[in-house]
Amino acid sequence: MEHPTVLVVDDDPDLLHLIGLRLTTAGYAVVAAASGEEALALFRARAPRAVVTDLRMEGMDGHALFERLHAEAPSIPVIILTAHGSIPEAVKATQRGVFGFLTKPFDGHELLERVAAAVALSPPLSSATPGAAVLGNACASAAMGELQRRAHRVAMADEPVLIVGPSGAGKEVLARALHDAGKRARKPFVALRCGELPGGRAGEDAQMAQAVVAVSGGTLFLDDIDRLLPGAQVRLLPLVRELGVFSALALPHENPNVRVIAATSQALDQAIRAGRFRADLFYALSRNSLTVPSLAERREDIPLLVAHFVAHFSGTAAAGPRGFSPESLALLQQADWHGNVRQLRNVVEQALSLTVTPQVPAALVRRLLHEESAREMAAFDEARRAFEHDYLVQLLKTTGGNVARAARVAQRNRTEFYKLLARHGLDPGSFKQPGT
Image (cartoon, rainbow, N blue to C red; front, side, top):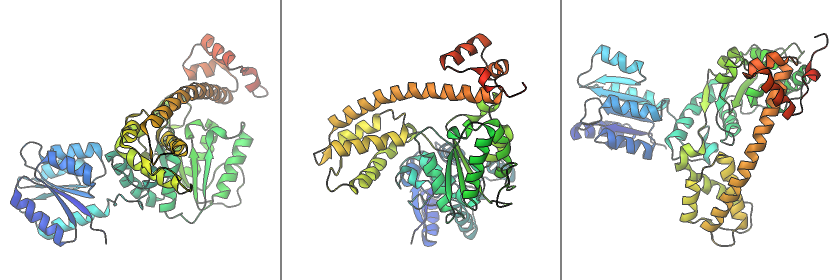
């Protein structure tokens, strides 16, 4: 049976012992800290499900500790105890996001009730938590711990979700984890990449409607939602608002009952200002928003990810290396990882296939990272050209080949815009609608 971990912080050793004893007797695993500074270190190391802290402490007080914890993990429940409490101070604290505020001498039963309510909102960070699959069923970083806590709550909400994060960070993996942990787990999960939809309203509508029918009762994952053309955005909005209609196309079911999870690696606020993305669709999707951090923001997780990938790839081979040398792991933790988890997985797979020694040597990792960097730069240039081409095509489709309007949306003068079109071999006349 799991004993939920609670971090208790107080510079009074007697009170710290008393609170710890009460919580331990109630079935909690207590981690005790005598200062705010010690509490921060223990929070990162032990990943508690709730924090109980005194307000008045030497050095970092309870309010300062809460601010630091809230910056790292906004969803962690924090209960503040103080002998100097007042109603205005309690109101101010709860408005800032403090979960609970108790005045000393506190009632033991009330403390246990508050802690129980806090723990109920804060899931254990384990392989069963939605989002755990993004990092190989384990996490060491505060960023991924926060993502798992929020994902746990979002999974059961059965509402639209917007997942934001860089390419290769694991947005689709997280979407699948949300589906598998939610009420629709036994229903279909269908992924649709908006940048790959066929051009023209008819083709776009047909493929979207086909996906809606296929996923009826399940989850529709729309990747690269920022690349969805404005017309399709209009017709998607009712479905996101759970009205059960995608477009004017007839559907076999009046109410397909679809949960929409969308993902983007681009800042949608910029797309909204440029007129490429509807603000109402953004607000409908982002009622529940999750951000997947880049691998560079969670380097503590790299050894865990490597171990996960080693176990995965070793299971498909008769024999091979058992892991990476300490020097190799150090190189992996120091790398840039612009391709995020996807790139790390690729490097681990290559290293395991090329190694003939019990452990992957640092020399091989160094060479693979150098080769990855060269490929990455070439791929980046190619991707930038492809994105620029697709963006221009979408812009010309949206404006019906009107160069003046397209240039205004792109915030370029007409001369510069014509040069861009020429560079990509695009003729605006071919995008004009009949009769215009």
